Image (cartoon, rainbow, N blue to C red; front, side, top):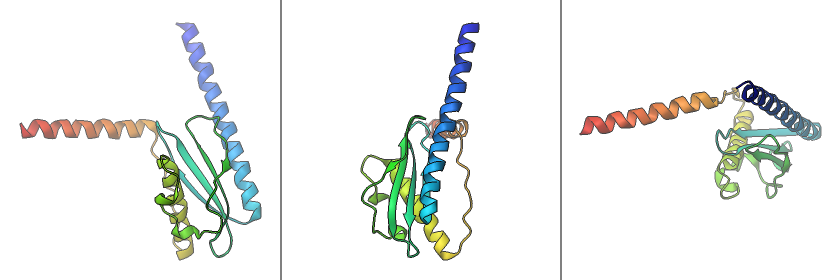
Length: 155
């Protein structure tokens, strides 16, 4: 029993360490882009799927100069180039512009475009906290219970 607790503790610490290293890598890549100019940032958390973060280096007119992404389910994912966006106006990007079969990456691209449009319009950009795994699980269980109750009420 003690051995299991020790292994779980070590795994928890390693996960925290690898998560920290991944965030440090993301921050360094963001700072490299930021030194070159304005950066539009979009994110979509994944839960049980691969989460995604996109960064677009843009000029004063909102034209994408360089694009990067961080996508993956593990802490070993690293920032990589995101091809095909150079020369495009960021405000016009939508989910359809992202690669097929990468739902969260497409949503992160749309989030970056929305953030840029708000910035360009002079609106306040509020940081929206993403619900954690426990909150998402609670919502899913509540939704299932509601569906079950509705089916029982119909019978």
